[in-house]
Length: 112
Image (cartoon, rainbow, N blue to C red):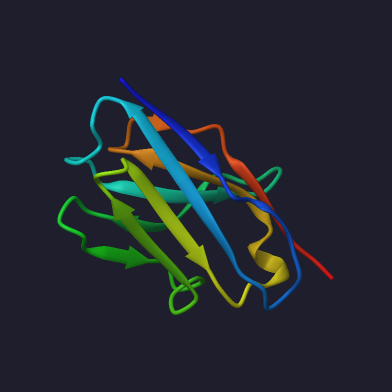
C-alpha cells in the first residue's frame, strides 16, 4: 500500500506561482509512474502531468510550459511547480501513484 499526502495549495493571484508536494509513505514509489490530476466541482478528474520512474515527463497542453513535475525518490516526494497561474487553474489537485493510489487532494484558487 502507498499513502499519499498532498500539500502546498492555497490562494494565489493570477500570474503567481505555487509548488505542490505529494509525500508518499508505505511502499516505495520509485518504480511507479506518478501523476498529477485536477478536478473542479461537477467535473471529472483530469490528468495534467505525469513522470515515469526514469524521469520522463508528459504534460497536457493546458499546462505545458507553465507547470513542471519532478520527483525526489530519496524523499519519496513528487512535486508540481506551477508558474504563471491563471484563474482556470483553480481546482483541487490530486496526485496518484501507479494508477492505483490517490491522495486526498489540495485546493488551489487563482483569483485577484
